[in-house]
Image (cartoon, rainbow, N blue to C red; front, side, top):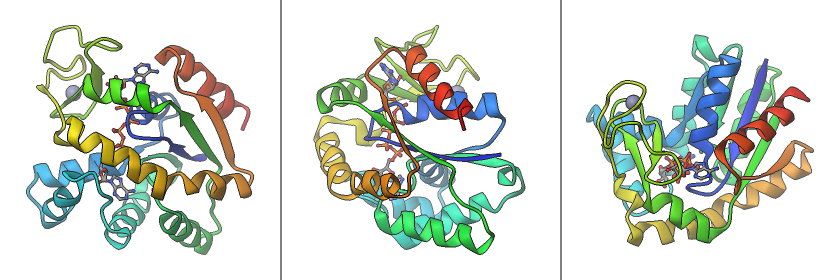
Length: 216
Ligand code: AP5
Ligand code: ZN
């Protein structure tokens, strides 16, 4: 039973690795960006509200985001643990999560920071495409699909996210360093932070992540 947080800048590889961890540990992969994009795809108010922020590379307000996550982690499949990807993203969200868990005598077990340089992040985001159906990320050079433009897992169409365009990526990295990076200290002071060098092959990063998880 593990509650894991994957921390890292846009493009660090959180989604790529969280999908594997989720499969191997059979715990749900809860990604706030995926939840917002799914809501947008369904045309809900939440999705439309989130889109305005996402398109600019800004964060969706904490109240909306926290409510969405607390509801998701209260679902049946999250009773045996989960992996959070892209949440918390502000110290305020981290505190709200801790408080909500505490009410049920629960807590986060591990916060893993996947560390990647800005130069490499930009390269990864500009070459990324994701599946319209399951949101699995691919990369034109590092992790191409078997057939161009088609998801290996479900045959879904691959597309480039609007916020992966060069003009938005810069702001996302800035927002990360201003608003999300302070969480590194937040988890460090709780004794929960482990750092992994994310600038290695996908399989090497995966192995190091499992070394950390297995030691828990
Ligand atoms: P979100 O969807 O969470 O995006 P993000 O954090 O910017 O992260 P990404 O999905 O861009 O990157 P990733 O780390 O998952 O990398 P990936 O595995 O795809 O958020 C989008 C927006 O939603 C935010 O800007 C905000 O507006 C809103 N939002 C979301 N959560 C929020 C919150 N909590 N509060 C407020 N607002 C929120 O990998 C990237 C690429 O690199 C891929 O092409 C992949 O194939 C490749 N790759 C992966 N690993 C490697 C490797 N080791 N070597 C080489 N290539 C690799
Ligand atoms: Zn797919």
